[in-house]
Image 1 (cartoon, helix red, strand yellow):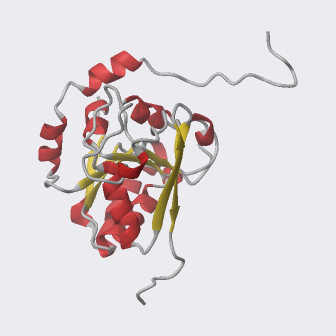
Image 2 (cartoon, rainbow, N blue to C red):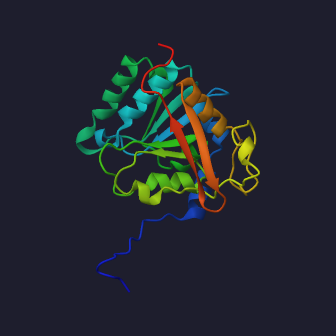
Length: 231
């Protein structure tokens, strides 16, 4: 029974088991090797149609900023342009060249199965510059246990999973290499994600903090200076 005053929103979904099965059709290490990802490099994934409103150019600019700070990472742009935006990939390639990150930006073109590539990425970024109605790529990433960074617009805030929370006993070690909280279950991982994030934040002269309640989620707050403190 639906109320005219308080409508119920039923979000799109995915077949979780099928998506995980598709993600195992290629080994992550094989994909990373094929893409030229070196040991110690972070692979940032952006999935979807290459389009100006999807904001891939902002991901490229962010990558260039990370490179100037000495961060070892590459950007995977998985997808291609359609309809009237066939020239947009070339625009992105020229932008990458002008920012001296051509070798760090990987264009896959259209992929029949994106799941193995998403599984091979370390973090998934979603950068639409116009309100995103839903953002299916976000639930696909979360279904594979991937951390997600997304623009706060449209329907995105409604579907971001705040996670299962961090047990109080694990919080003091959460930024230590290879430490994983005791409630991660079968979610794959190495215990390096937050270490890399913390290092990246510190390279920008910032700080990261966390507040968490087990079973309710965790909130990470990143504070970055408006100006370079070393300048």
